[in-house]
Length: 288
Image 1 (cartoon, helix red, strand yellow):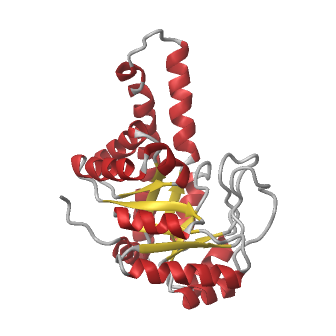
Image 2 (cartoon, one colour):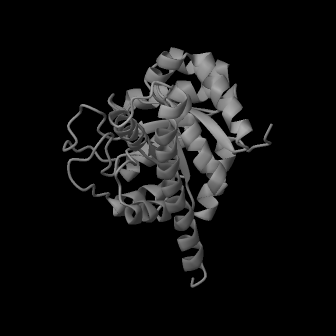
C-alpha cells in the first residue's frame, strides 16, 4: 500500500510550490483504467472523483474498492473525492466508506446557509481526518445557463473560509461545467485577489475545454486543483462509437481498449499542462 499524504497536506504542498493536482471523474472500470494508466506513465499524483450518479451506477462499496485496488496496482499516489454533493447523508456514507475528501455544494443557497451547511460538514469530516471542499459563487452546472453571472467576491471568500474552516474552495471566475458554447474567459485578476485573501486551496471546476495557457496562468495565480469530467466522458464515448461503427466484434475486451487508450492520451495531455505550469513557475522564480 502506498504511503501517501492526506489531501490537506498535499494541497499545502501544492500551494507552497505554485502547483496543482488534476482531479478526474471516473464512471466505470474502463475510464478508471484510462486515467490511472496516464498517471502511472507520467508519474503524477491524481484525484479520483465520483458524483452521486456514479456512486448510484456502480454502487458505493464497489466503486471505492475498485478505485483503491487500481491506485495500488498502478502505484499511483491518489485520493478519492466525492464531487458536488448536496446531501449530508451521502457525505456520511462516503466518509464511512473511506473517502479521503468530500465536497458539499450549497452554492445556490444564500451565503449564510452555505456557511452553516459547510461548517457542519467540516466538523463531521474532522472525525475522519478528511478534506472538505465547498463552492462559493455561480459555476453553471449541466443544463443551467452559462451566461448567468455570479462570480466569487474576494471579501466573501475570505469570510466564508474563516467562518467554515473549509480546506478547499471552488471559485466562480468564468468557468462552467459541460461543453463551452464559446471560448471561456477566466477572470484571472479576480482569482489573484481571492488567492491573496484566503489560505484555502482554490479549485477550478469546469476544466474541460479551457486552453492550456489559461490553465497554466490560473495555476500560477493560485488554483491548486483542476476538475476534469466532461472531456473524459466525451473522449471515451466518441472513440467507442467510432470503434463500433467500424467493427462487428461483440467481444467487449476488444471493443473497449481503444476508448481506454483515448482517455489515457487525454489525461496525459492534461497532466503535462499541470507539470509544465510548475516548471514555468519555477523558472520565473529564478529571476525574482
